[in-house]
Image (cartoon, rainbow, N blue to C red):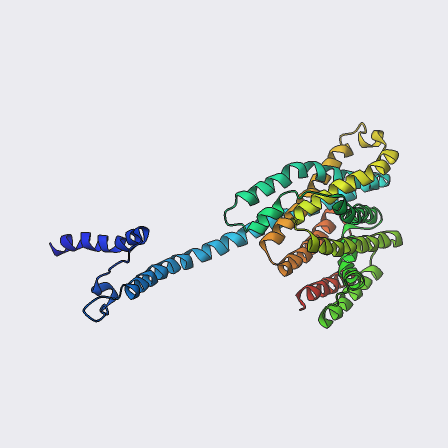
Amino acid sequence: MWLRLCLPALLALSLQPHFCVALGSTPRLHSSVLGSTPRLRGGAKQPALVAHRASALVAAADSGSRELQAPKQRARAVLEVGALFAACVSLSLMSDTLTKRVLQQDSGLTVTVTFFHFAMSALAGTVVVPALAWLARSNPAAEDGAKKQAGLPPLSLRDMGVLFPLICCQALGFLFTNLSLKFVTVSFSHTVKACECLFTALLTYMLLGQVVSLPKYLSLLPVAAGVALSSATELQFSAAGFGAAMMSNLLFASRSVLSTRLFQQRSAAASTLYWLMCCGALAMLSPLFLTQISFASLMPHTTTAPLGALALCGLAHFGYNMLSFMILQRTSPITHVILHAVRRILVIGVSTTMLRNQITALNWAGIAVAFVGVLGYSLSP
């Protein structure tokens, strides 16, 4: 009997603060809920203190619900980054192995492979980049700065002048990367490319006047030692392949430093900038491609026509680079560098098995020392 009488009153009491807040009035809660209610002289209650206690109860309830949802959100974020990383490693491995196999069939297709990388990237970017921009603008949780960066910024002649060095580094960097795959194995090319941080530290000081910390400089020593040990024990060592990989390191480090300078002047999404550089590199390599192209070699009368392999390789190349930018947006820069180093190690291991390359124990030791130095460089303050 008492329960039936008290239940409507308790329900009305629980809903009263919400209705009062909506109407702009101060809620009056029963003393059994908030304790004894202080009174002013003459018996008047203190409405401000009562409202403060009521809002404290509501805030405590909201905080409890957020604490229950936080582990689920963290688990969802970890699974999302893990899925993106697995797809990034798979596409990177597909791009490298397909490039190596095409160059093994015809070593004269270095420019052609690079051209298809940029052609498929420019084509796929016309769909992917606007889609990512639309998703960023439609996301209510995204910040205003991220929404502005997602779109394609208006480009002036001054912006094109700033982008031109980046386009040159983009085009020539990937051209020298594919040239190194023409002479050396995928595993050795990735090991040499771990030296990119050496050039980054040097160019950061020369172009930006920035000096990194002493631990970062010290961590460069195992990087150089590991690459030297791996080069000395490489069974298929080629001076031309080693030189091409080192030249790509210099070009990509220049691209990274110049991109930093660009981001200080303009606000743009990294994925949008990458797509613009791919479009510019495509236009830059088109004359060279048209002078060296042999359409008969792209469509031989066999079942393994390289035209389909080149298109698939270009799409994989664009896919893993875009996924890398998506991972960077969801993690910290340090986590991204660590995942990038792990990706290289996985590509080295899996490509060695798929392409049946032999790696000695000392070569593996050089790879391990080099990547320990890369991680040390990334984690140093």
